[in-house]
Image 1 (cartoon, rainbow, N blue to C red):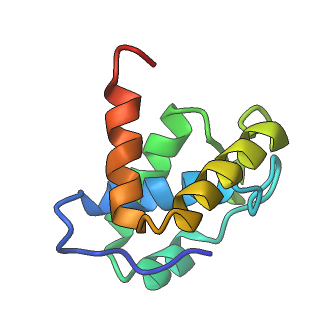
Image 2 (cartoon, rainbow, N blue to C red):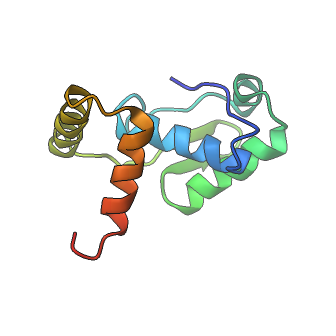
Image 3 (cartoon, rainbow, N blue to C red):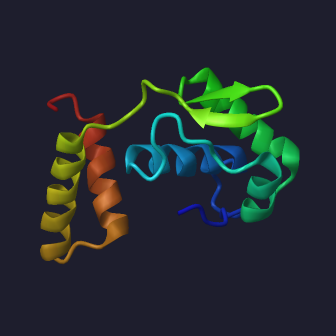
Length: 120
């Protein structure tokens, strides 16, 4: 579910849009071949300038997440899906963190530290 971006987060607005669309793809809410909402609709959903939306969509195209068809719109690429096994493992890890009483912000810090770790 796409939601408004946080213009005060310190993360560039276009990158927040990129991250939200990637999350929708990884979670299976947008599947290979699905058309994403039109640019003007995304402009309204995110409450940003059309150029910001286009910058985000261009980045997603460059990274291989989207393809565009002139005059038709943007579509999820056929080769960018997360496996159900990975999603299952992520859900298990989140469940462990939640059941341990660890909030989302602390969980994200833990994940970031593990991600950066050379031992991992």
